Image (cartoon, rainbow, N blue to C red; front, side):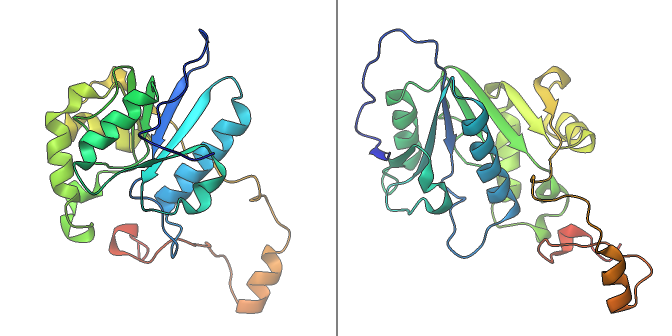
Length: 219
């Protein structure tokens, strides 16, 4: 069910249901299903499936087709004028108590009064800005100044956790390591020997990500 952000969520009797917001402003793509987009989609899919006690709200731009996220409870956010303020208004009107940012969004000053969670996959833009999208290194510099506004950081490895502590200055007690999991469709197979015979391989590693310098595939 999709509701514009200017439609206030109906008042309910006192409820113990938690209202959780997940913005996907820069994740919806009709051409590519990136790693971060897949992470967010699987996160939302499994949280809404396993957690029936709470309410989840997915936020995207007003003019944007939510794409694969259309099956969830989405909110269109007017984004052409004052986008950061409109995000804040949308969160407030929906009475969001937990906001989970699954990727780098420039909305750190416009969070919720409850708990704010930020997932950081890696800090490659800081170390190798030439390998990253334009603007990402500046984002991390800004994030470093706003570090106190995030309640919990989610890192996908101990290495990323150490980087967040060392380069962003986040305290260790605010960082939780949550390793990425394989989709349930991925499981051990018996066809590895057939693949080795077909291509004349002694051993192999199957890589299905994008071929970019930051992936360090040659090494």
